[in-house]
Image (cartoon, rainbow, N blue to C red; front, top):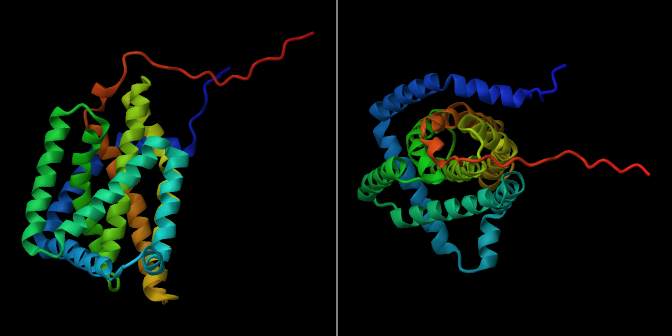
Length: 286
């Protein structure tokens, strides 16, 4: 009799994505090169429009009440996403999401609509991510450079979705969410590796923990953006939101998750494996 626990549908899907990770990498590289070659100006204009919108909004906010009045939908969605990461991913994932969100907002503030800053900022970020990927023994370092590569791919996918104004706000919101979830995923993988779990198992476990935050969080974010910018948006806006939602979820589980498996995670694995016993204690017979 086979007493082993049978994997569920989610685990089978994630294991299948790892099996076809090379296909995901090739598709991502080809598509990203095509996006950059055919529409490089759009890659620059999206961060610029997002930073300009953020700067104008930040200049108009003069109090805490004014902040929540202008971002009530986005604030609720952001708090809900962070709370889900704390619940399903643990403290590390929650803290990583908070720090990642703050870093992205600070980057938009520093960019401040400067056309000559976009490429140097991205170049420095990519070089730092590559150096960390090669030489630093850390879970964030293992996921940061794959995110740089997959981030360009995500931007191209969001650009293909089209949509209504403000496009920069859509790009910024989904990009910040993708970065926060990716960094949370990295720390959860590191936690499992520190407990001695093999690399593939750690990646699958971490991805399963990110399932609810990504599915529900991306949905809340899409609804919040439509409601905050359209006040009962028309069918076209909701269709665009649904398309962006599908793109973001597919990007994380079909591309980013399997592509991160090429990172040197194994050097983070502990030499001894800690096993938690979950068997219930049997009551002693009187």
